[in-house]
Length: 472
Image (cartoon, rainbow, N blue to C red; front, side):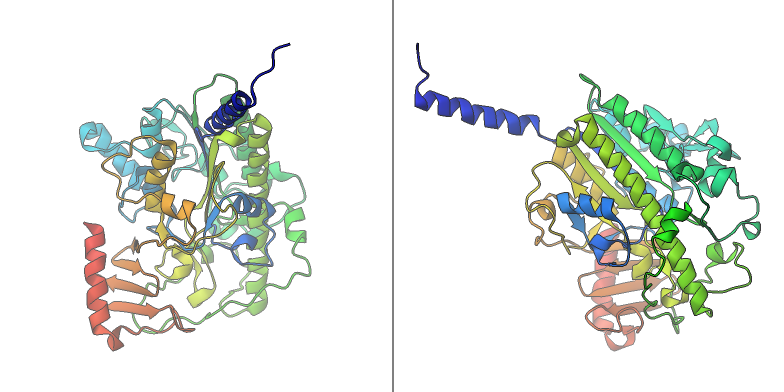
């Protein structure tokens, strides 16, 4: 009997190992978008929150603890995610882009899913990925003639069930309740039942079906995006999630005072228009805690949907060749600066969770404190998948931070209405159209509660120049 020489066996083993690594190379993208999710997660330092599924994703990949969105509102933030470019601060930013495409398509750059589609990917969207769940306009957001992102998706899906249409699902409460007037709809709710009594249960079920289909043998690579609506207002989730916070101490709101002087403070109009039973969390501490408890329940409900999707990915056998990216579309003030909501340029509204995980990531589970932007996601995915990075994207690949969690980041730009802001490692500068400035020193405990612009005119000038350069 002939025996294989020892040295030849070693070569075979090496070649097999190389082939195994090649086979494990990421080929697909699973993007999970969560609405109004501030970094109120255990893996991001909120110990009282129950978020085991996002936490395990962070353990398998890299959590970006200083990720900033480019505008603190759903529409413009998703515009930047999906185009890789700065845009307007308006919720209809993607619809305005679609109108330009209709008038002069050669003048509009491809979106991220369109770019991947042009490189052989099957692109699928389920739930709220662009501003309108399902990606359509019209009175009920279901008009097939009004497309938010033309050419982007092979399938753009939004199951609505008893909520009748995407507009109904967007602000839906249990068992098909649709928002007609916000003042007649409860600010928060926790009904008995399974996950499907609220819209995200249906979104997740459809996502599981799509992921199974996309994972079939010999299927082309996929770019799949899933948009979970909670914890967006109103704060509705099955009662079992609220019960998880029975007896749990909810931390007090830090610096809850309304800012003095120039700022982007607002009256929390989106929040205050809901039925609040004549209670105001700005003056009623017990009610503030109750609101935070319901927000936490919604976070855990959303986290459970994330877990179901991750489990399906593993079951499908495609986990080892898929990049998973979880992204919060912006933060949310839970009473900081006397704001309940988003739409401001303080830290709480601009900072959101970002987690990226893929097979073979170095130093898995280590977080990074590098400052990065939503703008960076498009070029990062192109870089990791070795797809050409288009010339028009304005962000930077995060490969350095993915390979070394101690790698430096860069500044982060944000905008809202007539104001623009720049976040550096130590400072936040906000410039107003009126000519006024806010400067906050994050090296101090006062952070964004004391405007020190008058004390540091030279720094204001230097950061103003940096902000202008960022916009070029």
